[in-house]
Image (cartoon, rainbow, N blue to C red; front, top):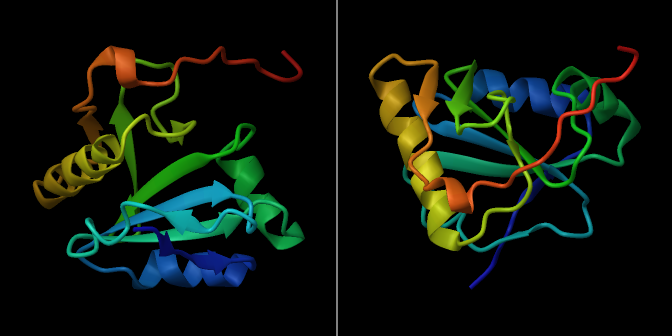
Length: 143
């Protein structure tokens, strides 16, 4: 069963939800408002809030450039207003780029971030095997 995500279209909405989400992982899924479904949001609802950030909104572009969102979907994690990072063996620890292969992969990643955050960590190791982690080439602009 799919769950319709709350969609954020304004910078102020993103700022507020980052600031106000306490003792839960905040999962910001950068994508298009035409795809607001998530099959795993209900399973992680006890320890995470999952929201869709509409990448097509003009006000959201400040976050898209800050997090260097160039591939859709991209997922950014927060805990108590702290940006959570994940070492997944890729060059970019700040976000998850691409879709998750399985529903359980998403649940495992969010749970690993939650457990690490509860221990005071700001970066956690990815619990997934390397074959289920999306691989991509980093291209730097103006270098």
